[in-house]
Length: 596
Image (cartoon, rainbow, N blue to C red; front, side):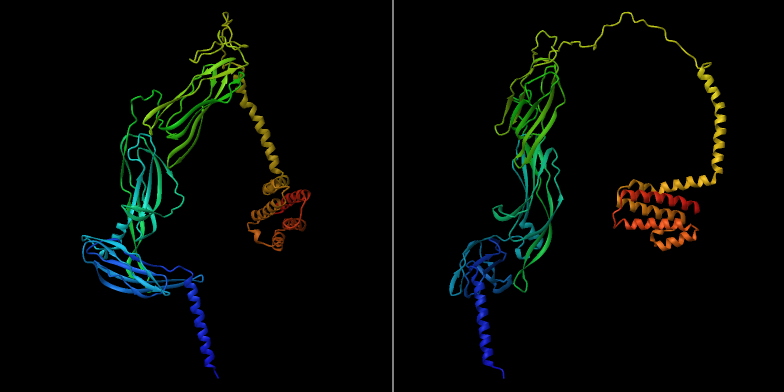
């Protein structure tokens, strides 16, 4: 007999247990109850959707009176519940569709609901109703909504820079919270004509909160570039264009109450931007100015100031700071002629950030003095334009004196050389220079003729001398042709060397040697028997060679060599054994070739 009372009690216990589990799951999160509007501003001919959303089931829902609006539809309820990793997610909403009855600003007041015995209220929100719009939101397509809620903007740090002053262009894609972007693809990248440009890498796309035309948006930075205008006047920055895949919410919901989306592709462009580039002022422009724009430091240094003649030193001309470091030339050193100088080595340590170029550039000169003395390196000046102050600045290095301690003396009366590139007197050493000979003792140049000379008669008799040499060579060749046995031996030896050349190169390397040796033996049989023997067993090869009347000793030696090639893969073989197998293979191929 079934005990119905026991079953009833068990069902009651299970129900209480599940209810407690649900209550615990719901108690893990804070209770929320809020009001969500489809838009904060609408035309009088549009519709407003109002959702009251809670994360716990409640009772006694009390909506506001919706002053200034007429309820077209609602309230409609939707419930969504799911379990993910043991955690329950629950959402319940009451939705209304409203039509405005007048223009102006209205406040949708608080709604209330009782959850778990406590009363919760939503926050009031303001809505602005404007004049009628051309296309109400309920008539707008997915493309229309995407157009209103998706914008690509090129933000330029400065619209009126100086020539060669850095400006930054940041391309931002603004996306309204009403839509979402699932993909994008560049269609047209700007070329930045009349600008020196450097892209700044965007490591990862991360959404940030911002505003566009006073409305809240999310945005991502897609591209960053630093530009240095190379021409004054009005310069255009070409637009960046993208093909964007947009998910637009519709007014429909699925079976679970989730909002349904429509997908569309939109082309957005950052628009053309015009930069008004100011020319550098001509007033008070230094004579040595060569286009440097920024804020810089300047220095001239040497690796040493005291050395001997024929030794070398390095002089470095360096500009460091922030500005167009890659777009101007460094000043050149002015040195006395007694100092031999080589072409400078240019070094660049520049990084480009959103603030522009920063770092340093330098020229390093190698200098070798020829004579003993003191040689001054004249001060160098470097001029640049500072766009922050709108003025030119000139930096001057200190004079550097190079003291050459040991070496030949200059013929100049004063060993201290002035910095105006005076020429040094030439000092003769050894036999570098000699006096001009006054008595050259010239003799007449003789003439000789080929006709009748010794060379003429030798070339005349040379063909006659070739006749006996040709006769001797002909007899020698006939003798070799008649020596059939000797020719076979020579031919066999040559053939063995041909097939075993690869194996000979691998002597001492066990694995490679026996692989090459086995390949040589099979290639020999392939060439002589016109068959592919690498697929035959040793018994089949023995049968083929016996059919060709090869003596048993040669057949056994050939098979023994193949067995050695196989055994070498698993056993150690010495260099002596490899040499013996090589000699044996050469002998077997020679013998077999005489019999085939």
